[in-house]
Length: 129
Image 1 (cartoon, one colour):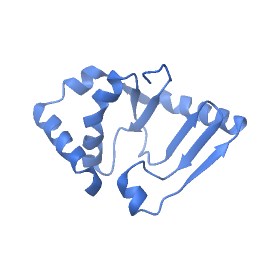
Image 2: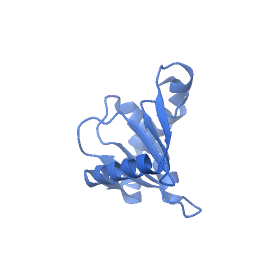
Image 3: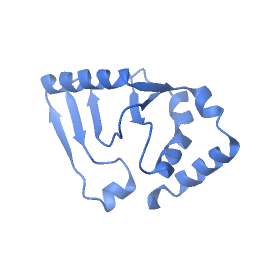
């Protein structure tokens, strides 16, 4: 994002594991200060993972980009190199943005100190969550 790449992330607004959300929030400020735009989904629980790069490479599935998914969980993503599929995924992402709330640096900074401390601790423990 610092190089001018448009990086937008939609995360679940509500999650079945609140501690994972708090661990994620510990990194939001850093990412946002470096140009990443973060949104929270306002619909039902969002568990899928999807990415579109340069409108031509797309990945969709259940694999988390974390230690646990790489080492222990049986998860899978489908990676497709196709301009048509990339365009369809981009359209779906833009539709999802309509039902998402932008997270601001003010949101990140105004969190209570205890919540920030808990987020930092949970991020430190992320390999075991």
